[in-house]
Length: 160
Image 1: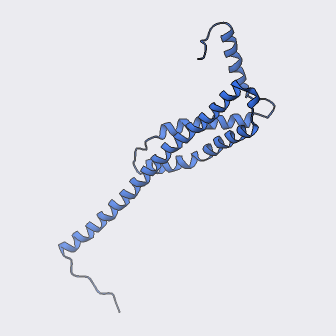
Image 2: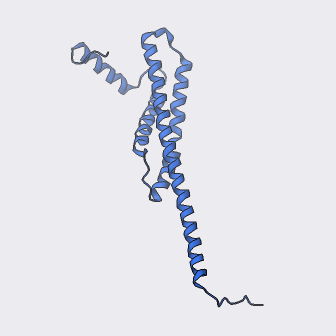
Image 3: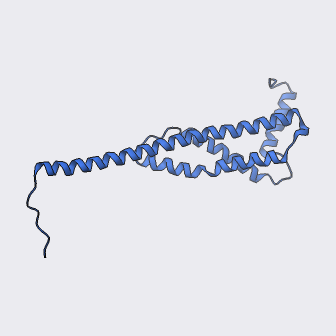
């Protein structure tokens, strides 16, 4: 038996169909905007976490400078693991941000997150370059030596 032919089309039926389509469009836009908002909040939190890891490392290094006998291999390994862990999550966050940008959203915090990710990547690469027989990588050793020479020659200010 053939399907019945729809011969009745009313203005209200046409409007109802259009309104339902608009309702679906608004729901999709809302869901996408909500996803972008979550992405932005996640990046902002990630930036804060990165700065806490840097602060923890700085605090450890300051303690070590003041008390060389407080060296802790466990602390150094944990700080390295924290940085590696943070850096390993960056690509997923960039992918998420790119999906939102492709939808036409301006993704806030992206540039600051990118700067943190670049710094984290450089730090992780320095871990990988360090073959275990020295505390610093070659570029850091050169910078350290230059800073010491400049300080000895009175070309730098005292750190307070």
